[in-house]
Amino acid sequence: KNENYFDWVITLQSVLSAKHSYTAVELGAGYAPWSVLGGVLARDFLHIDDINLLALEADDAHAEYSKIHFNNNKFNNPEKHKVILGAIAGQSGEIKFPLVEDPQSDYGASIYNKSYSEYRSVMGYSLAELFQMIPEKIDLLHVDAQGAEYDIFTKTTLTLLQNVRYLVISTHFNEQKHDELVTLLKNIKTHGI
View 1 (spheres, rainbow, N blue to C red):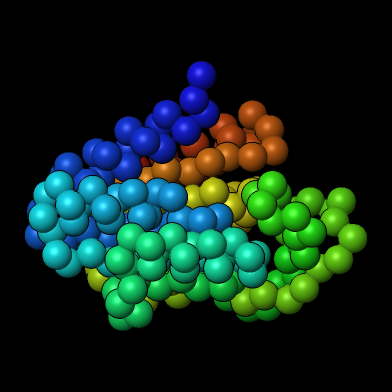
View 2: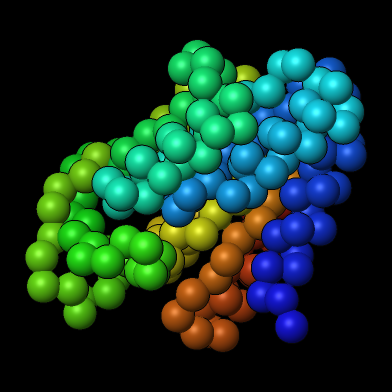
């Protein structure tokens, strides 16, 4: 069983439906596996030259891993390939994020997990703020925000999501919160709220 099955499928679909450019945004990026995978496939198999990648990661070491992953795959144009140290948030501003002791094995840090002993301040970015840093069309928006996905999308409107072609959200906490998020996204799609 592969818990990332749908991540693979949707990333591949986002690439196959791309035309003249490819844009991927990964929030809670870790080492940016999905944005880099999409970028490599679009560039190497579809021969798309206009690749735009944005990876947002709140942990220092993981953000560095993302930069290394970008560079190792020749995504090193700072205007088109951005790794931002920060966290996705319902609104922009400073937030407290756990200080991860073992970044090689801990990819689950969250502002909601109170088991960490130390925290530090990082910049929180709203979707609206991040979307201003990239081209209008987003082929893939991948969100693995360790619980913050609920806050992000309760403050999101259809206007923000209308140019997102494929959306992957890893949900956390419990089934009730998952179902609430599904309902919210359906309402955004149906009613534009």
